[in-house]
Length: 317
Image 1: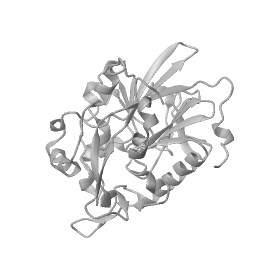
Image 2: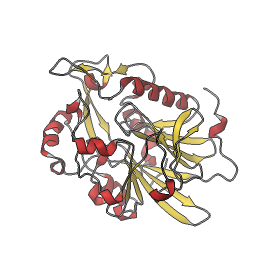
Image 3: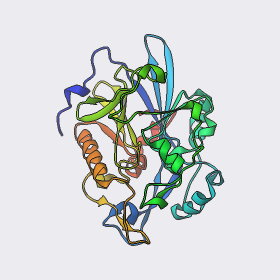
Image 4: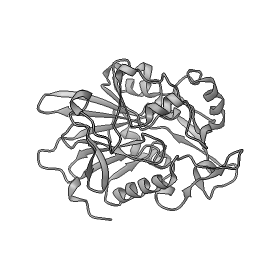
């Protein structure tokens, strides 16, 4: 195991967050689209995990709650018709409990959530934003353009469909790109939205400006793909990796990212930029070797570990 990097060590007065896993449905992934080598016709039913993050400011006594991803919609008919047809290829799909149901298991409701951060805007992560009428939505750079476009960038356009009206305009903030300069004071959400280097991570945003929670730019899977790094305690860091990869065996180097050809003979990948994805996976794998806990959005291995069942809300990570 690599040594814990000094940049990740917490000072004596460090503030921390609590993180709670949330059940948010499950879907079935055909192996050949996501990993190689694969067994012909094989598929895996995987969770679509979401997470509740709670931040308590000891100076102001203010408690703020964040959801990282919203998982699947309970009612599949709430998806656009073209997407409903596409979802037939992801059966079996399990949509209960959804995020709202999982929050209710610990006595919370959507109105208790201050922020919803979407790792990215694929259908199995966006849930029902309309349930969270009082929440501010945060998305990565380029996400709003994808929603307006209505589909994935070519050639893998069939991987998902996007809804232009998915998010409430007045309650949504798109983060700047890592090379953009922005006026933080005008954004009114986080006190500082500048991308900075943190240890081995080239671009992070300190969400609460106290080192307890970082947004991580995680390029490769889709424009605007975000991860989270959370401090749970001294030398206890949790990395929520979204769709950086879809199987831990890829992160361990046991399998490679899947590739396929579409009807036009073009090479396709579930990640819009495979090379950027590989670099992101390398960074995450290195964090894990340093002792940082890593959880993927579709992490069947993590879910199947008996001890992790108690880490779902109202339990904690």
